[in-house]
Image (spheres, rainbow, N blue to C red):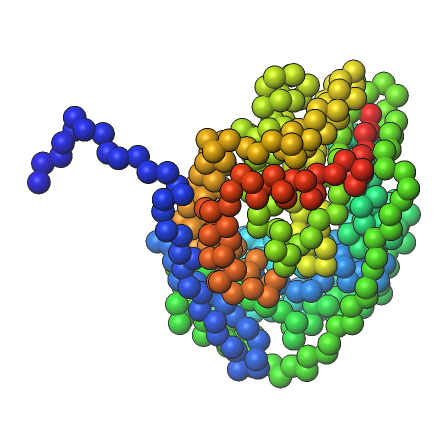
Length: 427
């Protein structure tokens, strides 16, 4: 068959494609620990995530979650921090630790052939970290230095203040780092948090890459043989206060020529039926480079280099926040235009052309996410950690494809009420 090089191939919109999330394998280790694994990709690379309920939500004191994650691989009873890092480097592997609002994650990147040598090291870090006093002192010094530098930046302060307003300064999602809280950290605090929340009985493991039964059995040999007693973790309930003052102006730098704007409100998490439709509306409003906010405030008015609105769904709540930085002399005008775009979405339905562009953008990005093992597993991680099945994914695809301009307008009228938004402007 000869190619017809005079006729261009047909162009298809992303909305025309079928979207199938490749299935994930579920395996229970001998002691009951869950392992979710996905065999995909062509390179012999493995990403292995260990996820614990050890985020900021579970902190008994501020700053503990980040300190625990940051110090875990800095020494065990058998190996020093230097020896651990040297062993990882010898195999060309990377071990990263992080803590967010809900979860703490320990991620190993390595070649599949090195798993047998590296898994015992990871197991040792997860079960026998000692948090040496000298390492804690260095961590506190570095954390305080970073904080002092960041506190001079208007965008950093604005992010702190909007979360504190929305959730409450003493709520796990709303409190923020302070110098005295970091200084007050003790080894005993961190060790107690580590033993309780990094107990292996709470872990969920996710492995993706060019992997199979051989790699699964490597994990079984290291993590599946120890008997576990799973202790239930008590969770507190927190209520977000509603400060009477909605607008807050902060003078952080008297000589600053630029300011940061944050305009936000609480918004339900992924379990609410309005969440998936709001993903579409939020994209149209401020979720991508062609959004209403970007077209008006960047392209037309020239007030900023970029402006976005983001949804932040957590396990126990969520928020919706507009964020941008602009010149000090146009901050008030930029804020006014944000509310103007909200009002326009409430008053007039989007055109079919604009809505189709947004749908194709959303679904086109999704096509990219379904192209590699790590991004596919990221989709599964989100589903599993939130208690969803693949049906949730399929339902959302249907919403993205079929939602109408009238439904988006009704959603805007429900959530874009100006008097329900908190506003922080920091110079």
